Length: 144
View: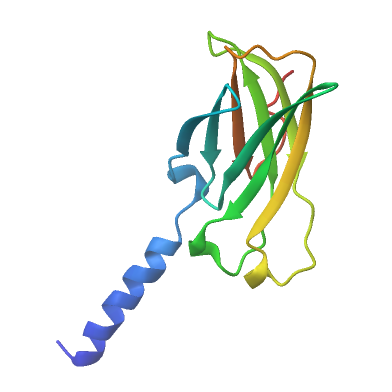
């Protein structure tokens, strides 16, 4: 075996691990409590929700936070949308909102995080769970 073959093998392994498709990557989920509400965040392959805050406002419940790009994708803009869903105690979808992530004019290398916020109208019981998910696909999956 020549020396050049030894150096090429690690390079091939690095590039093959970067070519993971979004459908093959499991979603990473985190659960915590914010302001008395059970929060679940779900990351995509490219980015994850962070800094989630819950506030009671006059017209309902405000959910705000940031979407942060995964470090593996340093040359990609953050894209897609954020799903904010309210689930009841039986895990049934009560309401859902898709928040598009605005395009950034910043160079992709510096496009690391995007802020989002949405007001869930009405009274949301504290027994319900709020799910925040970064999603790259269409918004067709939200039915209510």
